[in-house]
Image (cartoon, rainbow, N blue to C red):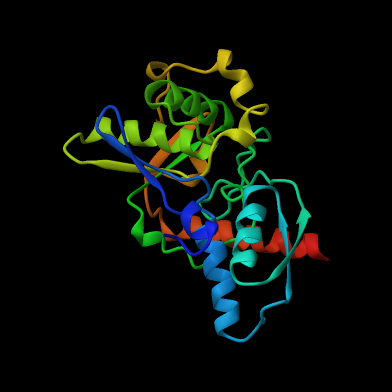
Length: 239
């Protein structure tokens, strides 16, 4: 028995997805980070039970933080914000994709705690292909998930074509409910799996729509230049 609904909701369902893949399907994966953040703030004495946490969110993290605050006896105030369309951490800030509504992937904050050396390859998938991947995932497995799951499904299939001797695990970080109008309503325009292939590149400067992929990490200069340009733009925006 779980002590709180937050503990139950954070557990993923492990689902086999043909051909030869495994999906970790979450109601909301962000509860892990929200619970961890609130617990850390409590343990370090920066907050105490009964305090109010204020956060800006474009959607699912607000729900996760509210559950975490309820779990630990905190109050919560959420300020609604829009998503952004730049991905600084993985060097795609120069490629615009205004239809993409995944805030975390599009963050304009350079997250310097990302351990770049742990990645073998990175795929950049735009809105049209992510939506198509989500629709195809639903058709193939019955898993109703968000845009990031659609993109992850495409990347999984592409990597399996390169080497089918391994078991591939991908994450469906949340359900598809918040994407019904913005994505699933366009299911008639979804591309078939056979028509979608990644464009292999060797530098972040060569990234292009609708889908690019490359070995990772890239030359160090690529990331350093990306972070420098992003930090300068962020500083200018703040001023």
